[in-house]
Length: 199
Image 1 (cartoon, helix red, strand yellow):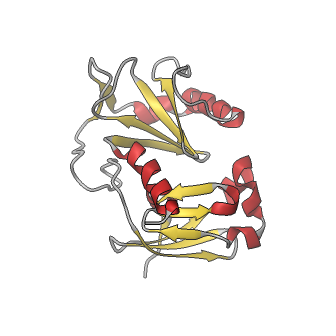
Image 2 (cartoon, one colour):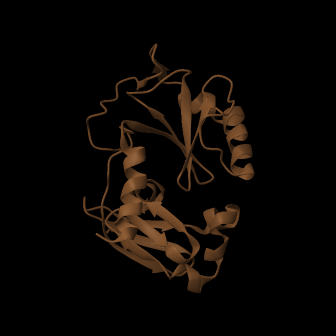
């Protein structure tokens, strides 16, 4: 196994255990854990390999967790003010801080109705003009992921504005990487952000 594979697998493994998707906001994946969690009740904000936690009631960053870059910290403040109530309205937590959503079976595969986070493998990936990734997944889904907005708003993705840099990618079953710029996106992120193609 190549080192690149091991890096992506490690990052996915850290995120995979009972994480449920709440929202995607300006490149930040906002999730909650459905088991083996701890108090106070909080949400996870995952961004470029960083996993920051924020108190679910107050929106305060929990100091013993990763700290996001300043612009993403501001985005999380925005999220709590403008989207948190809507996105979390069907979620409750137990006395241990584990979250549960009504009528969701976390053992079922991921779907729009079931937000449990599985490991989705990539079969084929092609970079296209306009900062678009065309992706075929092993579950048979075919998607297009337009990264234009993410690149324009995320300073860490700025090198990819150059189309020649954007095309200097490598991919495995577990994600895509731009090794020259230390940028990687796991397969689940590609799946969630991609738009379905009707073949």
